[in-house]
Length: 332
Ligand SMILES: NC(=O)c1ccc[n+]([C@@H]2O[C@H](COP(=O)([O-])OP(=O)(O)OC[C@H]3O[C@@H](n4cnc5c(N)ncnc54)[C@H](OP(=O)(O)O)[C@@H]3O)[C@@H](O)[C@H]2O)c1
Image (tube, helix red, strand yellow):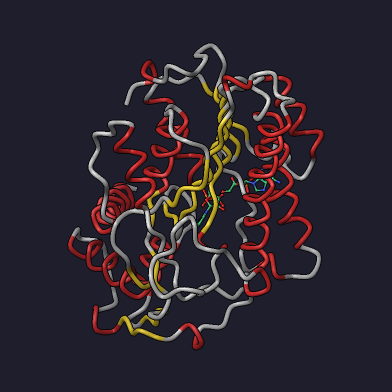
């Protein structure tokens, strides 16, 4: 992938990235720097996404043609607390709507936004497609509801702009890509890091085995977001997860065995990583049992972009991540 091949983009305008200190935001910094893409990375101190005027101010200042929104209210359990709902909706629904309203009126504008498997609530046993109905809303946790509201707000803004004829760039329509993903790990707090820490401290672990999804690398998500931004593919929702599936228990066993094989000090033996049902691990926010997402639509889009990279399997990516993590922690 090279930036010069992004022929629809005005290379003099910086890509604006929200969420610079998050897992995907950090990965975007690496990815865009590697590609030598002019970009501005904003954290909470630069732009508080609960403040519409703060967002409008940075949009007017940088006048981006491409926005990648990797910021989100991601404290899934905390969101269930009284008083947190509005906060989650401000960041996950209203802020993306403001970004969409700006980009929808930019010639060849692009908004890349990340969303979640938590917009689904166990209405299927196998992988969800982008065309499957979401919700029902009353069965989603507050975080899932707020992320769904963000998806809908973006779609609504773009539909209105395209149908109203108000946009002055009808022949150069702006596009949006909502990348729904699951179980993200990267540079930041995540399940894999927690489980490796616990595996070094304890001789027995109990891990949920009846919730299934795909662990997804933040670095890969960043690359996919950038690839979509430079593409000619159609606006819409795309499921972005690697191949394969795992339960949290399966992921824990795989990550711990990989770390042990690299010489990391691990206390727990595989047979002492015990599978438990989610009902034995009560948390404030209800999570879906089925977090499987089909990436068939994304794969088709990537093939149309002549994307040469091999589509990844989660095990390969987790193995690389754990090996790098272990090698860094052994060094420090
Ligand atoms: N993590 C997962 O397992 C997962 C699963 C499915 C989908 N996703 C989606 O993937 C995307 C990236 O997730 P991630 O794991 O990279 O998230 P993350 O590590 O939690 O990062 C989120 C970022 O958003 C920023 N943020 C929160 N509130 C803000 C505010 N009011 N103003 C400005 N910035 C604010 C945070 O800033 P601070 O650093 O200052 O707190 C943080 O850097 C999100 O859209 C998320 O919903 C994540």
